[in-house]
Amino acid sequence: MQKLYRTDYEGEFVIDGYVLKEGRRYENREFIPNTIVNNQHTGRAVVIGNGTSRLAVDLRKIERHAGGHLGKRRLQSYGCNALYRDMNPDFLVSINNFMVNEIVNDSYADNNVVLSNTTNCINHPNKIHLIPYAVSLCAGAIALYLACFDGHKNVYMLGYDNQGGESNNNVYAGTDNYAKSDHKVSSKKWEGQIKRIIDTYDDVDFIWVAGGTSRFPEDWKYCVNLRQVTVRDFVLEVDL
Image 1 (cartoon, rainbow, N blue to C red):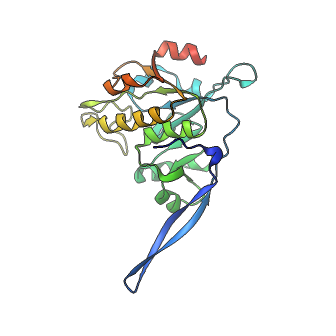
Image 2 (image 1 turned 90 degrees about the horizontal axis):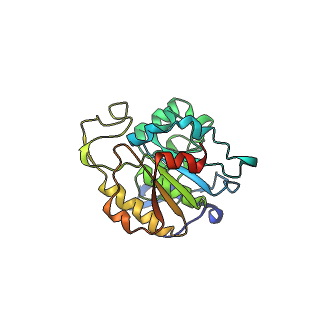
Image 3 (image 1 turned 135 degrees about the vertical axis):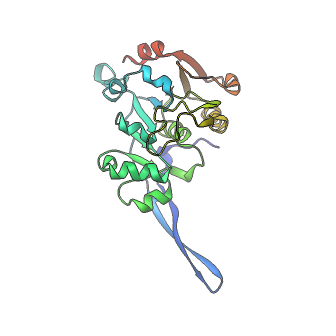
């Protein structure tokens, strides 16, 4: 992984189909321009995972966060999948086809920014924004990557609880498009992806919010630009 930024991103070519002719494959390539301009932020963001620890925070306060005098400390919010059921983050990520269908069918994408992969951009034209460079990560890691891609230098990680093979502690467990709460889940793969992002964007201050069932992975202890805070500290630091 390398440092990439939206300020340098004009768009990219994607493959939206192909034909076979005389034993050869001919790809149809289409250029999708950058559809998001996000260069007027404060450099502070909160990326919201769906672990149960985030239930200690009123998401409506994040959604309405003003950032003090002239909005100098306003948080931009990034989240994934069913988070839209409880709040309107500034940026919502989903790469699950069924989840994207739900989001679009609920008309959420009509007036909010939703990002997904090439397939969902093609299936839902003018509804979905393309995730730059088709990064191969889970939705939660992509949301974290996008906060860095947009140039934020202080990034809070709320609800990134991590799981070690025990029951599913996702707040949406058992609801549409989610596994049941007794489904065994391991986040080892996600933890590695997130560590890659933290290591790559070494000039970003990552702040992991601990609480409830959250677990801090052993490998993350070696990330010098990652620190832990309690939910109370988070509320005080960002002035919720």
